[in-house]
Amino acid sequence: MTESKTAEGASDKDLASRLFLSLGIMSRGPMRQIQGATQGEMALLGFLLATDEPTSPTEIAQRLALTTARIANTLNCLERKGLIKRTPDAVDRRRVQVTLTDEGRSFMVAGRKRALEDIQDLLDDLGEPDASEYVRIMGRIEALIAKREGIEPPPHALSGVGSFDAVAE
Image 1 (spheres, rainbow, N blue to C red):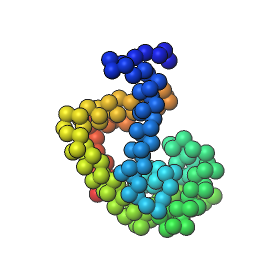
Image 2: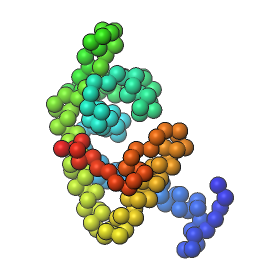
Image 3: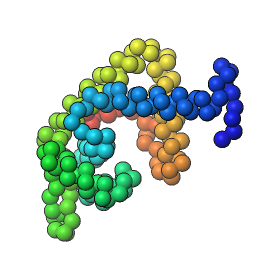
Image 4: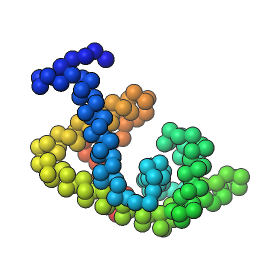
């Protein structure tokens, strides 16, 4: 990347550094409300909540771009916490299928509701024009990252419209 300056005199490197620090702070912000789970556990639980159907550990690993060993370890932790259950596959009993337990679903729905309320408060503090622009730009960034990774961007990243209300209710 070539070094260029913004109208305010900040370099691309300065902006990248500021964004990196801001994203770190934001990831610890609203989502910190979901206590009792690591970031990896939250990603796996969120995936299971969104898919809402029995899923193999291999598919989870592929979709989350993690190793099967990492997924197995995370599943062990979540199973001990009572948030997921593993059952033998109906067709091939050597394979297992993973689903959320009722406790796991309640945990995620409540946590996402608290996080969404925190994010709404932050966006309200920004004001509508800045909040809309921020969400639009984050959607563009998400789409660019997906393109670089060779995956299809989620619909909300392209349209700027989307909600996990249906998942969180």
